Amino acid sequence: MSALLLSAVATLVFCAPGYPGGAGDAQPFVDQFASAAAASAGWPKGSLAALYDPTEQGGLAKLGNADAALAFVPYAFFVQHGAALHLAPLAQADVVGIGTQERWALVAKTGALAGPASLAGYTILSVAGYAPDFVRHVALAAWSLPPEVRIEPTSQTLSALRRAVAGEQVVALLDGTQAAALPSLPFGAQLSVVLQSAPVPVAILALVDARLPAARAHSMQAGLLKLGHAAGEADTLGQLRLQGFVPVRLPGAAAPP
Image 1 (tube, helix red, strand yellow):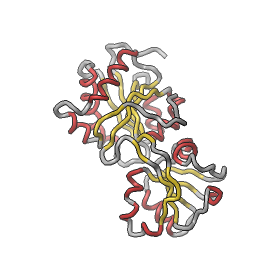
Image 2 (cartoon, rainbow, N blue to C red):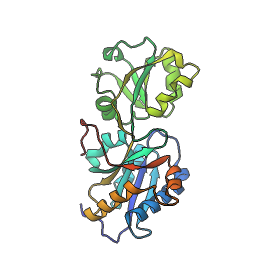
Image 3 (tube, rainbow, N blue to C red):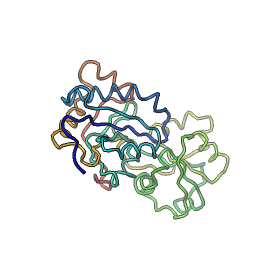
Image 4 (cartoon, rainbow, N blue to C red):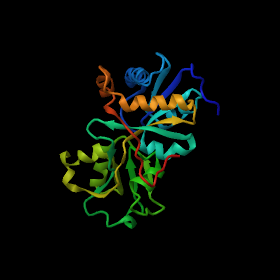
């Protein structure tokens, strides 16, 4: 696929399936981020646009457009779709209250599971349920899951946990923030973390299908790594719960596509 011309406007697509927030609510913040990122990279004003989509299919559709040169996505999305979209990571997000990495936790009713074989007949519910490759081969890589286990997406984590406590054959796979909140739940004592993932990135900002010339991609990478240090940039990042970006450090089992 031909690279975008240096003078063309590139688009950065934000896609966060399963997490709250509509496209209209987030758009002003991603617009401000795009302006700050372009300035930090030394790009001309107005040369980077941004779009936000809270759905997997909507995000994939936007990333299929020829001007979609950059993607900012959760690590689960990167694992599930990175190869097909030819995503090449430029930087790793440093998220407020989490950092650059997190551990995912499989949570079940206390005493319900004795090991991976016990999951036969169960449904795993998660904000990352749209990404079964991530669930099976990254978050729960330490277990060989029975083939009949169902993996389903949900944005209703509390409902999933209540169903588990009620004795339904469901378990919840929680991200780092959700897992940290377990002790505060009124029924938290009835739940147990039965498995944790190795540390994985929270989110990745990646080049899409080599749609930028190398020099432009490198300048964006350098700009991202220093973003947040100039006046006003911290506030712009904070609106998206970001502290900045760091060099990419992917788990050994998930090398860049």
